[in-house]
Image (cartoon, rainbow, N blue to C red; front, side, top):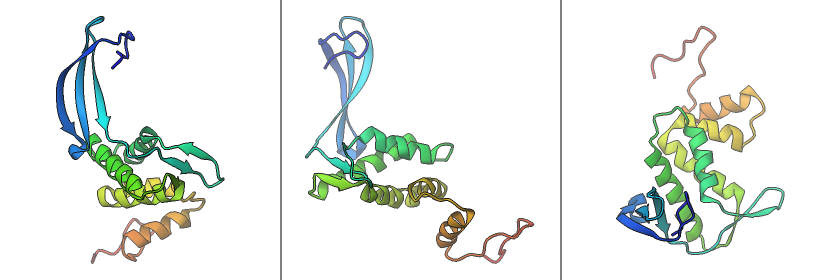
Length: 164
């Protein structure tokens, strides 16, 4: 493994342990040339996935892009980085398990929303508002109403249904 700091190809593994619920191996490495320490992850990759965008453009699946979009949705929410990594791993495994090499971006978006709703509903609404391209307040109200099980929206004075 090449050192990301100096480019030296002689690095040593100092520690290995399972990560991502056993789906990856986390390795701590040490560079003999510059003394830097860094972490690598080793994962099984069943096939190269290609994402098919709405406009038909095809691009390689990027795990980091998926993780970044989830991190944006959960920013400043009580969601741990490890939870995000578990969501990304689970979504990636499901995509690989579909048996297809080309995956529509719509499917990825739906899987992200499915994962987020179980972790943090605010993050779910954030992601859904971008993914579904909300343009009006009514779009938010409809989504929130469906999350609240048809609960009435709060009145202008901030009150809502206190019986719930």
